[in-house]
Length: 367
Length: 229
Image: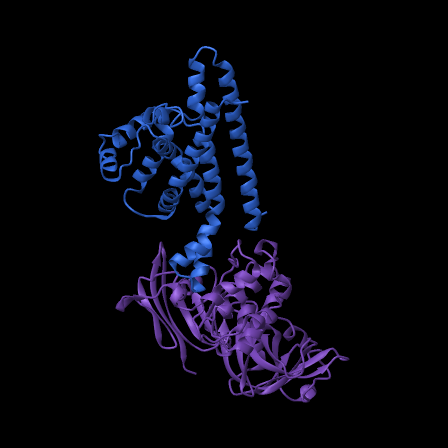
């Protein structure tokens, strides 16, 4: 894929130094990192709300900022509509006027969804006449999202748009963001410190820490890396698999998912057959067994675990003093398993070995 | 109830105060913006100058105006010569004196509303494609409205009571510069004027109360319009 967004920034904010560089193809790029890692500053610099000391920002090849050439487009000329954490709806305007604010200022001929389409997509029909003060948190963020969409941006910026919401409200807004990614094909730059949002939305992941880019690349490839403590040291470290719902077994309470190279069964999930779904398979929920004996079949009859996938051990990587990551190739996909050193020694695990990757249907069904 | 001369004083007070507010409102908005948001050398000095009429005796302010805008003053002379505008001893002069005295009140009220204004809203407007002037007119100014309005009402009410600066700069000419407070003062200086003074004082009191109540009502209305609880 060709490069959509190029960012190279150098800036100082008090004691904090930002020195970040990455490129991203079209799709959703998630800036992920702990608070204070500089992700919001990067977003502000792309929006034109922060003037970096040095650097360059280009969108589809056209520079928005090029400090060396003395170029710094003001935000109103960038067409990078932004959704902020606190919504920032105009309190003196109705929801409808808020939505139309950007639409009125969009250049003639700019392509994008129409008013009715956005209202329908975000379920705003009943809110149009209200004032922002009379909206719930989730409703506010949906209106803010609609307002930004209607400005017909070339790049949609989202600065922790769900962080101010409680879990149920977040679940209310997330599907809209997914629908937006899948339908509109609008490039997005999304800032978050919640791995769940990254898992569900990211095409490209940019990992940030202390104002620097640790790594950037496709989501699945990055989550499979064990050399990135920001991801690997997490309790929920693991691989994100792009899946498709293959079958639903309501009676057994199982959902069957196809992923590149195999099939997994997980606890039942409400999704139509054929729907795309991302599954985070945590390393601590994957165990391995030597093939043969009681575990020879595809579904073990002596185990409660729901999945036994033929796998090839690619590598054993130490994780601290006591544990190891196993890199397991399952078809074209990669799984990580987190086991003790003692287990590696006991089973005499060596790269190249054929194993069974045991994945619990229950734990894989969460998150 | 009132004699025609007394009615004239009431009418004159209202007119002088209204003109004073109309004069000072646009510059007060600009000065409040400069003080709240500007980063320029001399900002502290501007702040001090604007607030001077609050702390300097009104008579001194009136005297300074007389020095500047008197017929032979550095500003008064050219105004009279080139434009035929006379300020000293005229009702326009009374309005100018009132405007100067109430200017700090308006600036303060507007500045307060600006300090409470979330700049993030203007940033949001910018990312949606609104330029500087556009943002000011569609976001900043409407959100400043409560401050502008309450400043104007308070200044109007306070202007009705201006005495020292008017009598020093514009003198005490019945029908021209003799506003309500000056008429009350004059009534107390003539034998048998107590009844007139009491009537006029009652009117002044009623106007002040009405001003405060309407200010409160308006700001509540506006707050509701802006969607604040």
